[in-house]
Amino acid sequence: MPLSENKQTNETAGNLVKTLKGAFGTPPGYRVAHARGRIASGTFTPTSEAASLSKAQHFHNETPVIVRFSSSTGIPNIPDNDPNSMPRGIAVRFVLSNDGHKHTDIIAHSTPHFPTRTGEGFLSMLQAIGNGTIGKFLEDTPSAAAFVQEPKPFPVSFGTEKYYGLNAFEFLSGEGKSTFVRYLIVPVTGLQTLSDAAIKDKSDSYLFDELADRLAKEPIEFKYVAQIAEEGDPTDDVTKHWPEERKQVTLGTIKLDKIETQPESLGHEKKIIFDPIPRVDGIKPSGDPLLDMRATVYIIGGKERRAAPEVKEVNGVKANVDDAVLKAA
Image (cartoon, rainbow, N blue to C red; front, side, top):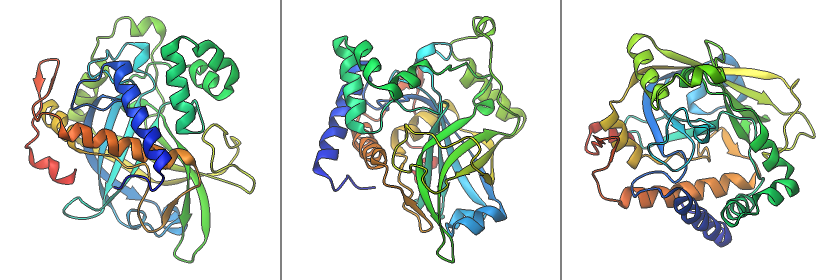
């Protein structure tokens, strides 16, 4: 996973990492965004429709997956019932080789909005928050206002949340046909959220506790869905939505049946760097400028995280960075 070939992208990404770290006071060894998380694993089973749309390896074979659920901000112990912990995040790694080094990832969060089209715009928003001019920024940037104003109800579970992959990608079939898509990760049980009254009775760790309890009893399943673009739909701007009536195709089912212990997960999360760019035959990035920027932010932040001291802890739980699960990092 290399840095961008664009010098300005690398500079902006570095400033984003620095600004996020400063805003949240993120300690060494943690992500500067979505710092609090937990890793689970399972399998992905593709549909025949997926195989017809793309020649990508995981759309033709059952594939192991590593999934990280997370809460917003760079605060590793942000309470699950804090509104600032929204939106929730999901990162899915499709493991394409036995040694875990060949893979492709998807990244999504629990709102259909993103505040800006570019990394430079996102940096400007963070700076506006820092210098007290965020009100003016929101007035001037409708996409950022939409992101802030969109209702973000607390989910019953990470497993009952719906996640939106906002970037567009180009699928290439075995016959060379091109199809642009955006991803949705949809809970098989249906979207389930809590009322304002109900969240008041929930603990600071209710989501992560519930995730472990649920997986101890039964698998969690999601439908991996592609929204299909039509001619004229923008593929290079996450702030512009495609019409609701666009065709949706189920690409397969993500079934999770194992969760790492908290020490294992802390160690694994320190090492693993998810990649917003597919880097697999059969799926190409679109012209969306956020893809290169996000990938560069992830690699800069990931390298800093890996270089931090090896033993970390959250809420008194120490990380186990030597576990064999790190082979797939």
